[in-house]
Amino acid sequence: MRMIKQGHLYQLTFLPSVFPVNCYFVEEEDGLTLIDAALPNSADGIATAARKVEKAIRRIVLTHAHSDHIGALDKLKQMFPDVPVYISRRDARLLTGDRTLDASEPGTPIRGGVPKPHTIKTTPDVLLDDGSRVGSLLAIWTPGHTPGSMSFLDTRTQFLIAGDAFQTRGGFAVTGQLRPLFPFPAMATWNKELGMESARKIREYQPELLAVGHGNMIAQPVELIDRALEL
Ligand SMILES: [Zn+2]
Image (cartoon, rainbow, N blue to C red; front, side, top):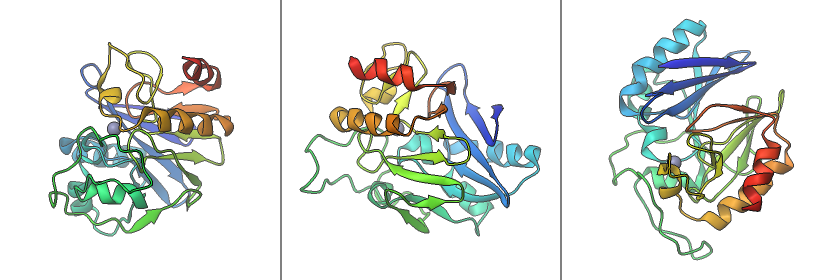
């Protein structure tokens, strides 16, 4: 596991050379907010990293319910039973294995590693809506990769943690734009058009740094976002 710090943000990367999967710590006064839960065998690595930082994990926040973002969730909840879990109201349904769509949503199938029904034991404690606050973070509803994908803006720094709304591994891309060197996020995307709309929404916040599920963090990402949106 690799750990890189940028201001209040720590990026934890599992399998950095093969299939890089990121999760993040956001430092708050009372401890750490963990964003995403990586792979099933990542729990010990995440706990060790928190010890290294000498802060307790206070919250677990999920960007979306794909298996490489919720892998260690149940194990972490066992290790830290009092830590509340946050996910969008919409992807809370995916977390239970329910792949059905609402009548108001485009009918493209939900893709990617969604848990099978009743395999995830953790019940989220807080359901997030667009504009919800989690410590210093503003929750921004950014559907496309999944119907309930959320991004989180650190309002102290304008750092944005976007889950799989973008990727930076294998080439910069908005969710759904296929990059042959790392095609997996695009292959797991529910609706590319909504993903593009969400990328435009994120752009409006003028993030200072972009932190995603797969690939390195990027400072001053707005120009790259603009270029990707023109494709
Ligand atoms: Zn995903």
